Image (cartoon, rainbow, N blue to C red; front, side, top):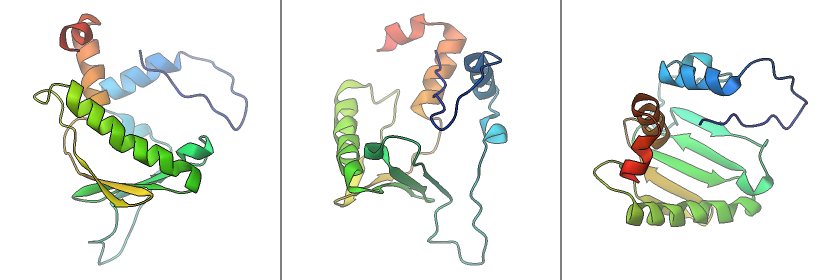
Length: 149
């Protein structure tokens, strides 16, 4: 079941089943319509600029990573020295996934090390693993996961 991350910066009053709400938003492909922030880059020459960028300091310092999405690649950059280990773990996790998942079901782009504190991935168009799993689970029930993994 989809879990909603807690809010660390202030107390929250829960007045509805957020898990159910988010599952339905995702199921109906409306997440982009409900996201709470966007970055818009305007100008004549945006060729070398990211089409999407995300960074958060609300997580633990060891996860302070910036993600830039370009037309042909995704770059993950550690924002502080404490997050370099997380970048290295992303590469190790990819290697583990490649050795355990069926490649005919899931496309895992190969990461390329750019610098000591960054990784680049080839941009993979299509549904994310999370979207695929959520859709299959909702459509076929919980049994689908045990059949394929």
